Length: 264
Image 1: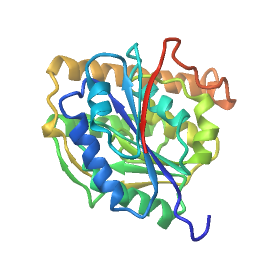
Image 2: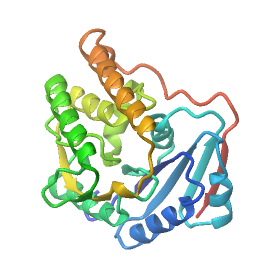
Image 3: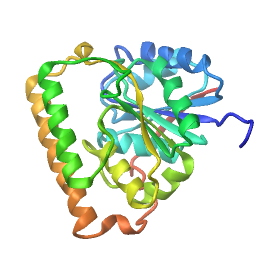
């Protein structure tokens, strides 16, 4: 594709974001309009839990496609659902919730080009990143980094920041192998990519303000436990049952009816 800018698909998993989802998508549209890339934004409502779908339908934002299925299945499942419908040469996801500055999207895309990368990971620990989050989260993040490095040898210093971009060919190879639905899907994507031979994985700076997020202490500890258990499950699948050695099945669609709206 020499001389031609790749088409970008941006996946936005959404759960209980009805108050800010339209403002969030407006930010994303404005950020992407400033890049040289043609794009689509694929929003996935992870369950029929609020009025996010109706808010997006009323907003009629250009280049936005939105899906909603009934049952909450987890963020990682929602991302894979969006990826399975993406048309882009480069496929990216970013967390909804406005903690991550969308103006950083262009930086990740430039890193893809500069490094001829398979995957670019937005990283809180990149020297150029601007990050606000609590001391407790910093300690937990460092602890998880060393835990992951010990188990998998992954050199990426931050596997969990919710913004990453992949070449389409990488996802075509790894999606049939992925099973994580909730907490450790980001890590599973990186582990499986390396496992099947895609080693050109690099970090890019981000701007993140996690102090903006309102999360209860009980919810945080449930997430931490979930991440820990899901990480051990990835280790078990990789090293004991060799689950990732071969593609398994086509992405499993929700059994229930899927709602869709599209604005071009």
